[in-house]
Image 1 (cartoon, rainbow, N blue to C red):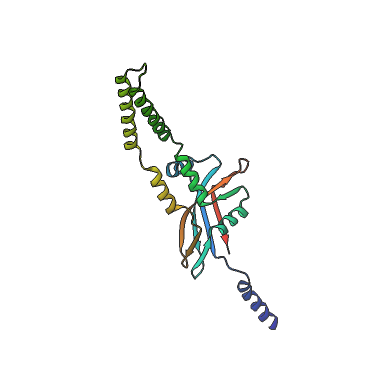
Image 2: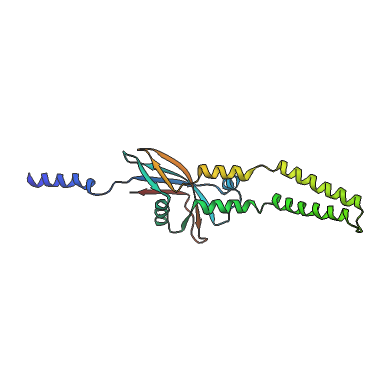
Length: 198
């Protein structure tokens, strides 16, 4: 009887000695066309996951993004998480290389050159240079009117959806965030993620 009592006591104390899980993180890969539509052009080795971070304890817990990055790297060595500020810089930089921005720059230069040619003595008739300059300025205005404010919208969406440096979650609550990762060409990216953290 004594042995049975000690055995039951030992079995009941095992959960108390081992740390319980605190967070469960699950996620699915965001399709590349949706990623492009939401955040703009991305390098081929960059992908993103829509992750759900859930606090599975009975009290408020905090977690920092570096812990999530480490857990993800340990669970899948082929994935290298990318920080929030690095991705924001990459998105803003890709916007400066868009076709409409390059065309606007070319039209700015052309209208300046044509205006200078119209005022100077050159082989180009002043009326033709003036008409070409007015045409370049008109197209610039049209481009700026038609061009959506994608950069501002993308930055706002980025700020609202991408994983923050730190999160505080109430007991039993979950949040959804976007997590960017780089993967090596040889490693296959998993379609889904499931990580348990203590």
